[in-house]
Every structure is written in C-alpha cells, then in structure tokens.
Image (cartoon, rainbow, N blue to C red; front, top):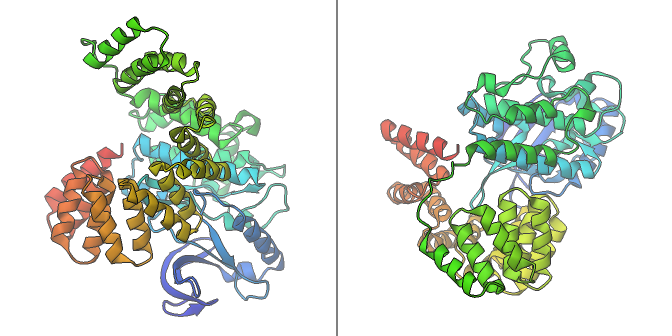
Length: 530
C-alpha cells in the first residue's frame, strides 16, 4: 500500500480511489504533465511471478495502443526493472456503473442502460478489431464521465489486464469475475470476442434489474449456472422493463458462442430497437393538419416536381412527427440531387436506427460540399468508433466555417489529449456564438485551472439559455463558495429538464439541510434519466 503524500514512480499520491482483486488505484499527480491521473498498482504477488510480469508488460503495451473515446487512455506503465507493476491512466472522476447501481438497487432507467451499453459496445468492438479481449466486463469497470454536452458517457477501463486474442493464459485469468464469465471461460477450448459479448449481456441484465443473472456463492455454483442454467428473465424481476429486452439478453447469454451476437454493435442495435419500441410515446389522436404542412401540400400541388417544394413538405412533416411521410418526401427530393434533402433524409434515418442507409445519404450530400452533411457524417462515424475518418469530415466541414463541426472537432481532439488544438477549435466555434462550444471551452479551461476565463465562457453560454453551461457555471461557483448564485443557476438549468442540474441542486440543498426539497429534485433527476 502506498501512502498519501508519498512519491511512487515519480507520481505524487493524492488519494486512494479504490482497491480490487488485482491491485489498488490511486489519484496521483503526473510528474511532468502536471495533471491528475489514475495510477493502478498491482498487488505484490503478481509482480513476484516472472510469467505474470512478462504477460503484464505485453498486455500493457496492447492497452496503450487502444485509442477510443470510450476506452480509458493508458499514459505510461512500469519498466521491466521496476519492483511493482503499475499503469497510469486518464482519471475519470464520475465513479462507475457499480456506483450507479448502489444508488438504484432495483436497476437503472431503461434509457440510461441503453446509453451505457451503446458506449461499452463501441469500446469493445474497437478493442476486438485490434485483437484485444477485455475478459472482465462488469459494471465496476464501466467508469462514468460527465460530459458537458453529451451527459453521462461510459468509459471502459482495465484493458491493462486484457490480452491479445489467441495468446497464452496470463494473469488476467486470476481476475476473472465469475458472475460475468462466459461458459467457455471454464473450459479448455478457445475463447474469442464472444466471451466479452456474454459478459456485456450479464452486465446489461444487472443494469436493468440490480442483480447478476446467476447469483451464486461458490465458484462451482457459478460454473454450473453459466454452463447449464436457463437464461433468466429481466421482466420477471422487473415487469416494467421493455417487453423485448429478454430476447436481447437471451441472445447475448447463449451458451454456445455461435448463437450469440457476432459483434457488440449488433447487440446494441437490437437493444435500441427493444427499448425504443416500448418507450416511444404513442401517436397523438388525429387533429386538424398544421397550417405549415397544409401550405406545403398546396405548394407541392402547384409545383409537383420541384425538389425544393418536396423537401419543404418533408421538413414540415418531420417537424410535426410524421416520420414515415416525411421520409417519402425527403427521398423524392434527394433522388433529384438536392443536398439538403439528402442530409435531412440521413438525419431522419439515423433517428430511426437505420445507420447504414443514413451514412449513404450523408456521404452523397457531403460529396457535394454540403457542410452540415460532412459534420453529420463525422458524428455518425465517431459514434461507431471510426475516429480517423470522422476527424477528416469534421475538418472538411470546419474549414467551411461550420460551427458545429469546429466544436465537434475540438471535442474529438480533446478526447485524445490534443488540448491545444482542441482549444483553438472551441475558440473558433465560440466566436461564432455557438453556445455548446462556449460551454466546452469553459470546461476545458476549468480542467486546466484557468478558472476566471472558464467562468467568462460559461457565463456567455449561460446567457443563451444553454443548460449545460448554467449547470457547469453553478458547479464552478459552488466550488468557489458562492452558493447563492450557484443555486440560482442550478434552478434555471433544472427547470429546462437538465437531470444533472436537478441532482446538483439536490446535493446543494441537502448539504444545507433542506432535505424535503432536496428529495424532490433527486426524484426529478432520476425521472429525467428514465
């Protein structure tokens, strides 16, 4: 155990964050970069084994090569001659999914589970394409990052004890979390990426219900359950859960790897369909057609082959929730080569989960030089982990002056540590008046300790009504002791439906003893995440 205030491998230990089966994680200060990192130091017994040390070095090298926004970045690792084995990683301050479950023992809201699984699926598929298995997917390894624009983001950690697909047994086998282990992990046959898919299914079951799919007390009980017990039902434990979730769980937890999803993204896509099919609001009762739609129909009747008119009708239908007919008119306009119609058709298809065709239309519109389509194509590619091509399209769109693309490029660069260029793009976007960029710039500056300028940008964004900025400004002011204005800003953000602001307001009220109102805001925050 390393003491707080001591120096380890050049890092100044600031706090102990947690202890697990493999080692201890500390909050530490990097000796040269002057930033806080998470420092994982393995227990002494692992360092004492020559085979384990060699395997750790190999796995740490693999982990350092994984560059993805949903994977914790590894900065440095122990040298072969070091007495202890250690990794330094990006510090994620938002806790983990196990902590979320501790606060919600009956399971998380369906939309929150969906977001966590999608992020984790992106991370795992990226690792699998690089020949790396995780082998310990579980809620405790899903760290939670609070992004000012996108809310909660799941970031997968502990790839430092993963191993390359097909390599010999390593120390990762001792870290096996039995409650999440695929049946083939207990045998002597080959293990591939589908074992991680099984573990992701076990994790998903727990996020929905608050308990693991096969509760047991002894290793032999886990082995027997994973090998032969039928897949349990989420809806028996939680009847309020989406009706099609059990089918997704059953496929992910198939005993035979060949019967599981071939990739994590296909699991996530099925989960999207399962959740949205039962959470989408029912269609409203028929009402008199909106004036804008009626006028658009009259314009089409007068000029039936005009792509601008067809696009306009599709746009108004889209705005009023008639997605099926909107898609029809977008298609008619898009087939004439109308770039805005192509782009909006891509947006609508993406909203409905048809990502492959959405990409096709974004690409068609982007090749015409349409800046919004370039940016939207970049967003889609980034969401599925194609960061290199996403950056290319963000840069092309940003070069036209597109504020969203400049902001998105800044966020991508920030996620991989290129803070100077990220700041430059945030500033360019913020100069156009983009509130999200102002808020993101404030967040970056706050992380670097430039609190005065961070506050300035938060205030500029907050004056536009940006809820993220109001919440972040409130958080900064609270840290500075200005509780009155912090409360005012939290309340403003909370009234927009911002769950994090509701939660932060509840924390502030609880701290000063206003427990009744604090409880109200905590309940609203949870409902806002459901």
